[in-house]
Length: 116
Length: 110
Image 1 (tube, each protein chain N blue to C red):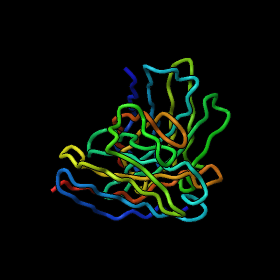
Image 2 (cartoon, chains in turn yellow, red):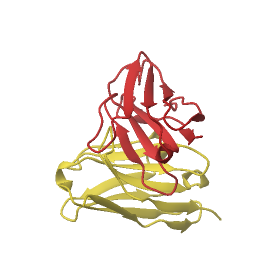
Image 3 (cartoon, rainbow over the protein chains, first blue to last red):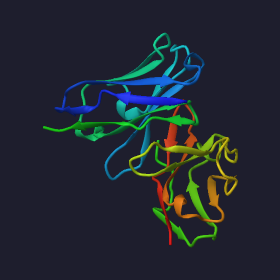
């Protein structure tokens, strides 16, 4: 079964950090681009970051550049999102998705709450 | 980059057809064939319904179709069914490695 499972969400103070993980199974992870997308309360989906299959190229939405880092470990079929300098605007459900311009597999999401 | 513009809501009765629009600019929707549509039932994982403007992934019913004209993409759901009630989002490649989403449309089956 093709599956993505996110983890690592939680409650964090403004200015804090969090590392999200996404474990993939059921497909050839090492040949797939991967992305993170978020859904903030009362808002629509927003693309956050993408990483190419070999990890040499990464892309970010402007609002997270310099604060978030996407990475992957093809040996462990996992993709990560390191989030630093978090603000309340980063509060959202974070989804991991397979693909770059169209995401054909999604996880159930992990919730990140930034609050004091 | 700005979000693509979608109507906040749409509705139709079972069996009817409904079309959801997604308006961008000549720098995103109008410039590239990389328009996708996603169905999202709250609390669940989003699902890819259409990619590259009009292509359907395996398993998506042919009741769902996509098209594009100039800077506006459209998703049409024919033969509406109760399970089609969900939020629908469009996306488009916007150049310079950016991907932009629409604000989402809540589809109600009356």
